Length: 400
Length: 136
Ligand code: SF4
Ligand code: SF4
Image (cartoon, rainbow over all chains, first blue to last red; front, top):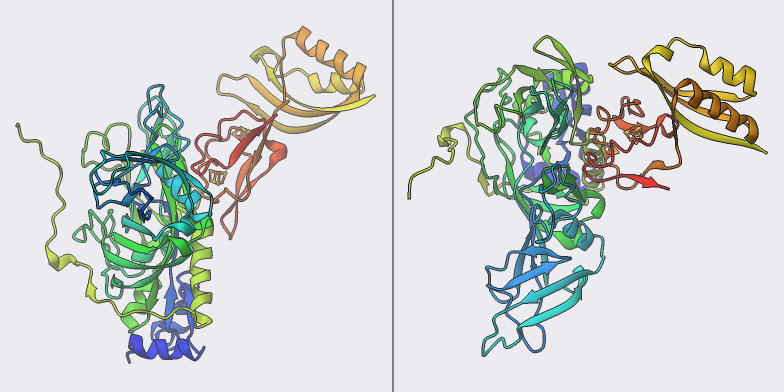
């Protein structure tokens, strides 16, 4: 038995495709068996909705009269600096960028109320954003200063381009010290006061395709409420980590770089986020469809929270000092139960990514496909797998 | 005039076992609704009450409490949740001292029970999309 993406697309076009979410497939596979489930199901939809720092958008602002060259100058959107190292009117706004006058962590923990992620959210929401630019002025681009309101509908291009999203597994963060710490994994109370994790577990895209057998470069996805594509492997893509018998990584492993037209996305799925004492960020909604090409692929999508393990890491000492030690592992079923045991202590757990919203994304993508509005794409190249021999590098300092 | 107020009472250790609420009812004709009761690790008592009764009775009741050494914090501010900003992540659940947030199963949406909230403000900054807002 085997299906092709072309055959599945034909069924989607006729409104006959059988589409289920990565949650629903678990029960179906348990009831009917892998073989029968693989025969019946065409597509399994996944979803995740969590803070993803390595996100941003490039914008082409159009040419003012007289012209101004933003390239090499400075541009602020609602006081948040954008990157200008491109041609005259292309800029990039990153999710973690902060206003120059933000107090940051001068009084610790800083609030980080507004940054690049919030600018992106406001643009997507159709709100006017204030642009202030200073340029050096040239014969062909004489203008040196520009202040104006910008609206996404007036831009030539507004493209979300996130270089690392949808991480395949992530640390569970705890705090062994005797003071509260403020991290990108949230507020961690002293003496193992809480444990924070951040993935959608059994619903998360790369847990359902652990060896990247269907998700590749060119895979069409749900991105920020609109349509996007996998552009490349994410930065720090690291397939060769410790894996379980089911192939699922037990450490942070693969990741996706994704791209899509910001103009058709929705603010509900791109939410500006503030990590207390850490910085600004954006919470991104991603859903990836997995074509059931074989029984093997179906078996991967039937993965359950109890079969996925994550490492527990101390963020007071081990993480900041780049020590490899972990305090143990917990399954997502344990994490989702609300408590785990760490060093013989019962520690309450919470998530930073939203399982409820991840389920909504998987459900939305399922509806799109069932209605024939969303066809699957054939990847143009695979993501690097274990055989690519990627080694994860740290920054070792060399004297100048 | 009858009034209704939400108050947080902080009991020093030696008062934890005293029938204080009983006196409020019996001696000051106040009706009460316990929103939250807990004993902190330092064995101080924390009680969040909704009290209603005649304004004069309420004021005398408060005087009685202050007199015996109970700390009173009036809940004049409200903390509300902006429902469109909440992503139902859950980061607030382990932050809130009164367990005002609970995980609804199987949807895994995060419920906010406003009646348990003592407006301490602890959840405001740890909430990543800043969905919790103070209203005066
Ligand atoms: S931390 Fe904020 S966004 Fe997350 S569940 Fe609580 S109120 Fe909602
Ligand atoms: S303000 Fe927030 S943390 Fe404080 S009691 Fe209310 S809900 Fe809980």
